[in-house]
Amino acid sequence: MTITINAEATEIPDDTSVTELLKLHEVKMPEMVSIELNGEILERDKYESTQLSNGDSVELLYFMGGGAIGI
Image 1 (tube, rainbow, N blue to C red):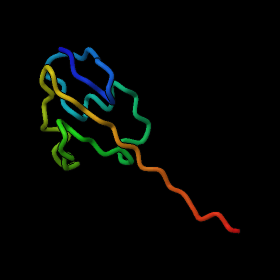
Image 2: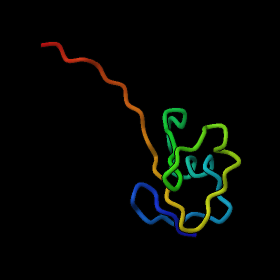
Image 3: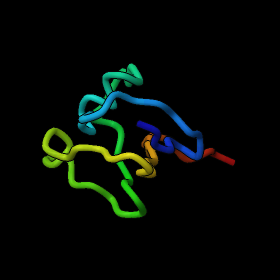
Image 4: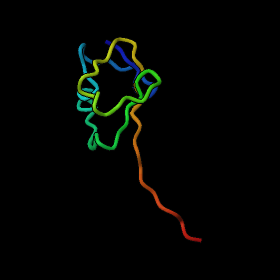
């Protein structure tokens, strides 16, 4: 099936869960990624049970730390 991941059409196997998608994309630190599925943030405890469907739109949102720059 075809879904859109970060604005790019991508083929994935049928019956892929969000957790499996993270593994397919070799996300190194999945605990640092939030998922937006069809415009809604998905709760982390639903990643395993949420099956993706043909035409879904997924955004992988990576959180990055930063700091203040001294002047």
